[in-house]
Structures are given as C-alpha cells and as structure tokens.
Length: 137
Ligand code: MC0
Image (cartoon, rainbow, N blue to C red; front, side):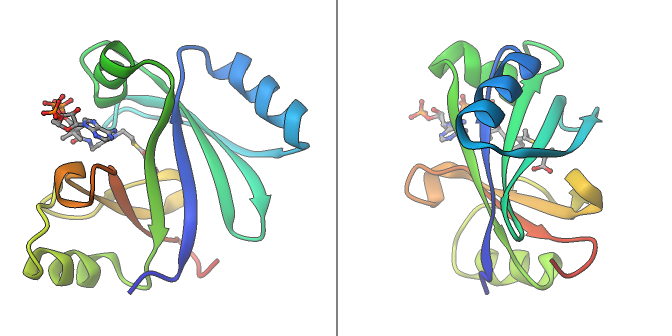
C-alpha cells in the first residue's frame, strides 16, 4: 500500500525563518509555497531528492490543527506522509484494519495531491497522512 515517504511535515511559528534554516543547512530547493485554508496552514515544500520533501507548516490561526500542536508541543515534526497509488482505496483498507480516519473523503493537499489523515493514536503516536500525488511522482 505505501510506496514511499512523500514528506515529513514540520510545524513552525515562522515559515520564512524555517525555510532559511532548512535550505541553508541542507541545500534544499523550495519547490512550492501554498496557503491551504481548509487545513489552516501556510506551507512550503522543500525537495530532498526525487519525490520526497520536507514540508514546513505555519498555522493560519491558533485553533487550527498546527496552531494547537504548537501550543501543546512546540515546534517540531508534526506528521509523516506516505505516498499511495490511490488514496480512497488506501483509506478503505486501513479503516478496515481498525485505524480511525480523520477525513471522511480525500481532501486537497499540497502540489495538487489528494490526502487523508489517520489518527495518531492508531498509528503508534504518529499523525499519518496518505498522499496520492497529482501526477505519479
Ligand atoms: C495531536 N496528537 C498528536 C498530534 N496532534 N500526536 C502526534 N502527532 C500529532 N501531530 C495527540 C495529542 O497529543 C492527543 O494525545 C491526541 O492526539 C488527541 O489530540 P488533541 O490535542 O486532543 O486533539 P486536536 O484537536 O489537537 O486534534 C488532533 C488531530 C488533528 C490529530 C485529530 O490535529 C487533526 O485532525 N489533524 C489532521 C489535519 C492536520 O493536521 N492538518 C494540518 C496539516 P493525548 O495523549 O494528549 O490525549 S495540513 C497538510 O499537511 C497538507 C497541507 C498537506 O500535507 O498537503
């Protein structure tokens, strides 16, 4: 079901500051910057190699998922996202195996992807995202 690690999502207070940090430390290229109102984030994707990325996430408000995470836990790894061939199919499969879905249907993710989240408590404490890329990556 899982094909690859698509991205590691990192919660931060200041997107521009963390873009400078990660691109400076690791020579990473910023591929896209987007605002996702539905998810309550301003984000940037930094390509590691091929089809895997570091995703930097700044909350649009304190009561968004990333805003709450920052208040509770501070900056750091927020979620891990795995590439799947078909997100709707993957959702059905994992739900059938007992994991709670945080989305009833796929939502819009970065770079035109379709995404769905699984509850961290059902994945060993790791907020997990399933990603179907817009085009096969
Ligand atoms: C919360 N918990 C986490 C966690 N967030 N554990 C691991 N990683 C995280 N990121 C834990 C809490 O500590 C708590 O455990 C339990 O889960 C329930 O959390 P809560 O604080 O009671 O509940 P909320 O209201 O903060 O909700 C958490 C939840 C929510 C994961 C359900 O954030 C959510 O639905 N997230 C999915 C959407 C999302 O994160 N969007 C932003 C990225 P204890 O032990 O204290 O009970 S959008 C994105 O990334 C897009 C743009 C993309 O990739 O394309």
